[in-house]
Image (cartoon, rainbow, N blue to C red; front, side, top):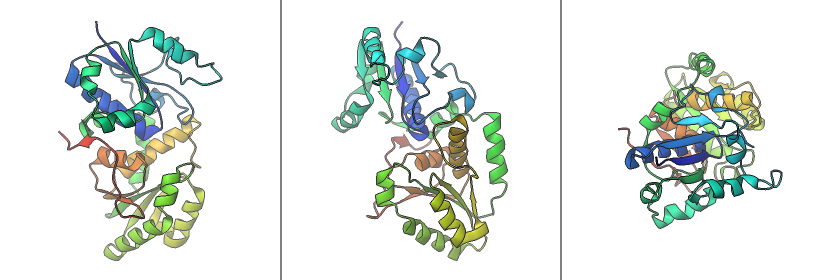
Length: 286
């Protein structure tokens, strides 16, 4: 029986968009797709520690799969790549997808061959927000935290996602002053404005608390992607953003666009050149 395999790579938003694309592709081809979630740098967390288990489609790597589907590095002597080439007839690696997308590569024909392996942090075919909702149902603990935060929202709540850390495009193209301008404009319209801030930068939290005081709600934790707690907080941030009425996001980040897709919320990417494009293949909800 033919089957195809995708290894999710990258951060939370990138994994979610790849899984949604994989689900859409499985529907188009009629060939079963197994989507593998591995714990690796930047994502030290199991799928079932965040979401309700979905063994039919997305699942955590088990047993030998933890070796076969691991990210090849000098520490493992790149053994996973050798094992993958022995196990699969056709392979596309994550760095290739950018160029293949630009070239209009026929992914559907490629997947119809069967016995394919793709590693990906970028989507490769159109998908809908319905796909996200079907695949990513947060577990009970995550829902409890999200409900506690959204219960503090006012009638007019906006989401602000300011990405910093190692994301140079967001740092260069989405400076703090653009967010301040957008927030000030919102406050002029709504006296009761509530600002939900999702950021990986403590200095940004301090700056916005200093300017807007009690209007600002945010995670009390220091952002980290190297622990289950840190990734869970990131998911809570994403889901809380999805409950706001408008999201202001950072250039080059998938995080807030995925939040917007989850909540069908309007989003504005704040960028120096004013273009603010969203690099997702998400279509109108079906």
